[in-house]
Length: 190
Image 1: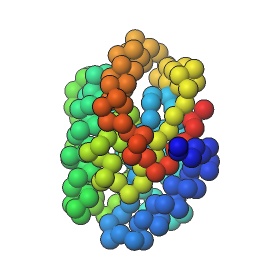
Image 2: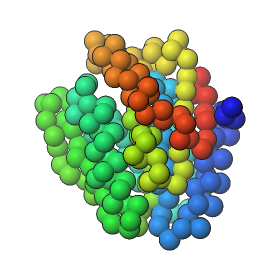
Image 3: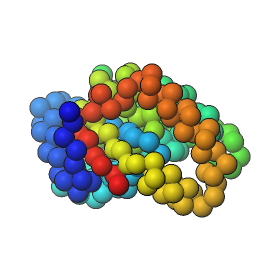
Image 4: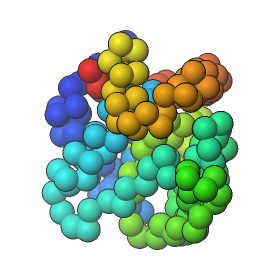
């Protein structure tokens, strides 16, 4: 049974794990943050970066900037595992291709140096392929009653028509990948 933390206590716990892991490794720490839409992943990632005790602070990559459209959860999850996380795990620079939601086209390629600390947050971050490539893995949950209104309000109506489609692919991802089973830290986002 996982030990659930509040977001505030989870920040301290993740920092302790990340800084301990970083000292034990020759490569900078990679932190993955996953959970359903509206659970608080983005806010947690911002709080974690703000609380980082030294500089440079970690690079924050959001899967929201990578998903190739509303049906792109699996594509983005696979892409970050292979092109961002896998190279970094062996000491090479990794990267990711952005997505322009308004024009529905890919954007620039972004490089994340092997020497940078990395926080990757978003639905699909903690896949079976990605989990072993990270030093710290975080799972955030919130009840459907909290997360749906939060997610819809955050996107000011842009998400409303796509909620069911997104949630269905999210549930398929969870059934296939069992992302929470890879987590080191469990956070209640509600």
